[in-house]
Length: 625
Image (cartoon, helix red, strand yellow):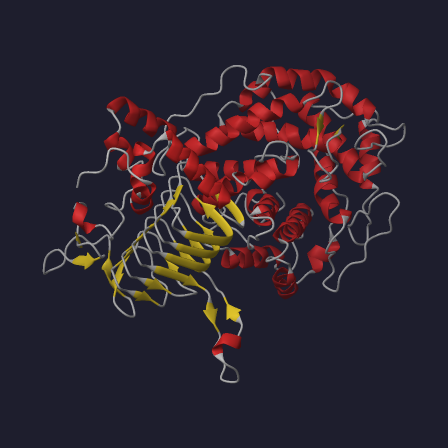
């Protein structure tokens, strides 16, 4: 069909895949205004389209790159999508719904991620709503007039025929249809005894096999292809199409990304490291009050400040801080550990009281298991005593504690607790006593409770997005999987979730980034990249990862202030913006991880060996390590 020379907004609302190639500048400006006007906690990716005629009233919306919401769609609740997802005309998405990458939803389809209860003692309209949510994997094609009810998980690579009512989970690669929907076959099967099969999706049939015709797409999906896959490259000239492909990496393989030059940001990597190395003595002197280390001048002495000083001197100089002899550093830090409990209180505070299972639940002493342990490890002797509450904890007690942690509302704190406990297990194994089944119980619980669609533990919230979940993931995996040299589950899903979080302007907008939030993205990306074998630059979403690392590195290197180091970050979070030991220690480690994601960490001439070490501290859960 011939299109008008200048398609109208109504035309784009119904055919949004044409917008990128055919819209005027005025129409693009109007679309940006439409996206800004969407209410709730909203984040919309690059090259997306939201129809003016769509009713989009989310509590939380995360629309991935190259995705669209077409005419008269109805969206409420919490919707999160990967890239290249399409909600075609008259689609309804309500409740809690998560879509993977490359999900195509046909016209008039409903994804209803909530429900009414139906107790007989009151009218339905007076009953509370419930929501288990809907999870849809990657590369899923849902035909027209389909209904997916609350609580359903649709696995990767599924195809659902038109008019289906999906009431139970569909495994990956399913081709399903019917009311209620049932699995007809595995999508990877190419032939049956009777010849090729087909499933109706609303605008024709999809022949079995590797090829499909234009008529096989769900109604309204324009051959079920994203703008980059169809409209942009076809409508533009060859040079324009090539430029579009270059600036938009696909999920299957990254497109070209800018390569960091010899002087990224305001300072080159080597210049940054040389400057820090030359000024580390002045920095440590600045944070020594004559008796103890303080994070920054005017602050009170803390155990962590002493440990940060040890880490910084080891990282940049391969030596101990010169304010004390090596023996005195060891004596002071070893003397902090209570022989009976193995815990270390903050200066001037009483020994924390253990909970009924023998270990503590909060407070500075939790982090001291990490920072004092690794400072003593760098100095040589390690902890003089085991952490007895962890050693004596039974597997049942540990599982009960894990289940009681606030995974839904405070996943960051829950992950930090796991980090401390797992690190205590590590030190106890050094003493030849890992406890009564705690390591096995810990990893067994984690592996059976991980969300397979995000690779994480916990739930995002409208107020903070994925902050709690991603930062909790970093702390949890740092102390468990990474420290013990074990692979994290679902690494590709982790990368998806972390990159989605890294686009959240509340935490990564200009002037809002702090050391915790950047480290807690950089380390998971680095860890999963290693596990997925992406060092050569052609791994899973490596183009996007490199692009993020380059942008971060360009902003991080100028943070160094001569003779003072780096501040933690803006606002009241952590120690705040004034340069100090904690900010310096963390940003030095962050720079290494960012540079290593780009294959350039060797230019720094240093490699973290303490808390933020890239290598596992041990291999597995057996032996002294």
